[in-house]
Amino acid sequence: MPFQDTTPKRQEWNFPLNKINPPKINPLKIHPPRDSYQRKIDYLRVSVTDRCNLRCYYCMPEEGMPMVTHNDIMRFEEIELLIRSAISIGFTKVRITGGEPLVRRGIVDLIGKINEIDGLNDLSLTTNGVLLEELAVDLKKSGINRINISLDTLKRERFKEITRIDSFDRVLKGIDAALSVGMSPVKINVVLIKGVNDDEVMDFVEMTREQHFSVRFIEFMPASQTGDWNDQKVISSSALIAKIEEKYPLTIVEEKLGAGPSVNYRVKGFKGTIGFITPVTSHFCEECNRIRVTADGKIRSCLFSDNESYILPLLREGKDIVEIGDFILKSLETKPKCHDINGVKFRSCQRSMSKIGG
Ligand code: SAM
Ligand code: SF4
Image (cartoon, rainbow, N blue to C red):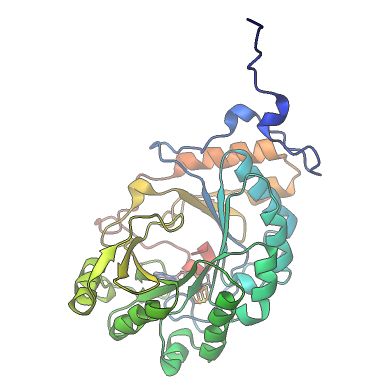
């Protein structure tokens, strides 16, 4: 019988030979990286700005928010290098966030470049939707399909009270634009706060009747510098599910919808789904798969830990993809086992969500 050579051929590694930035990657390193607790970490959330065109009262003060200076903000080529490096060590999912990512000039071009990086399987965006009507077509062309739009109320006046800006109609138009350009899934993120918007739960559920929205209720977290959080304002997802079920029987959706920790249900006969994200009452740290990078270039391995690894100098000093990949791997060692929100020692983090990247 003739000898058969089963050694993988070089091209089976599937390294693009025509890229400007040839990956100096050790193929043995390509696997989802793990942290000290053996969790698979393959999801990177990148904040491209700490600025915003809204002022949600639980996230930013109305005035006087200190902003990162122009010089300290990650430049586009630095963000691209950061993401290439993360992908070279096995990250596969990237979410662009902020502040409000769509206020950053040139964001569509940046997203287009990121979308071309080999090895990226999932590129998504979180936005407040205010600028979406103008940008939806270009965002879709540049590679955004998966979009999360934050909307805490379906009442115009209340929107103005929560966000302090009168942009409710623009957000609704932005949601329509996302649907009409064919983005899918379109997720609507609702932070529920007792006494603020918890009377609208059923209206949000109704949104899923005719449209393929994924409405996700998020527990209010102690992640703000406005000092407005207290545990009385948190509505636990279990209480919420019980309340919804009084009117709409829910069935669980087994299939995983995206990279996040939501538990998803559907009302029988409704097109969309309803998700519950429970960082406070039932944390999901054991399954945490992500790290964040702030707009000023600091890796936060846990949303609630102020232990940051400053990666911006490496991105600026001409370090290569291997050195930066190694730095990201090292930063995973700082990822705590759990945030322990409900523990006695828990302290709210120093940055608000707009400065971390939600
Ligand atoms: N500006 C964009 C937006 O609003 O979608 C992206 C950044 S924003 C910080 C990301 C998400 O964090 C939003 O859905 C917002 O409602 C949520 N968020 C901010 N502060 C929060 C808190 N204390 N608890 C829960 N969610 C919060
Ligand atoms: Fe801006 Fe998003 Fe914070 Fe609201 S939640 S102030 S939209 S960053």
